[in-house]
Image 1 (cartoon, rainbow, N blue to C red):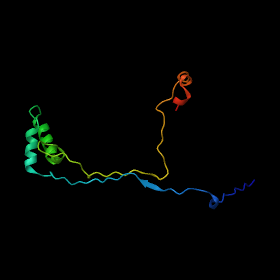
Image 2 (cartoon, one colour):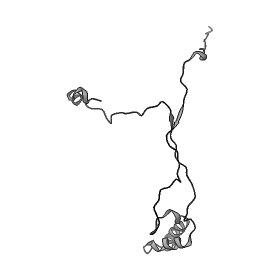
Image 3 (cartoon, helix red, strand yellow):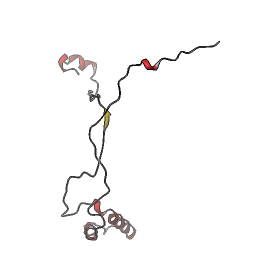
Length: 119
């Protein structure tokens, strides 16, 4: 028994093209104004409390802090806005936000609510 399968004609399908809309963009940068500054490293080491650490722990902590000294906020540093990070959310152009209630109401409570208050 031989079965014939007829393939549909895909040229006759109606479809809507996918159009992307950019909501916002940001970029990541590895640049830092404090990286490798020896006076900054000295300040950072002075601010650390290492009396309770043994020699190995203290050495490890200081190595990491020296390597990433630009990530710490020290006294006198200005806190500023940055454009160092970039992020982009791409969504279809015609998509609207989805609004959903946080949880279902029990039937007993649902029947007691006036119709205008129901979601």
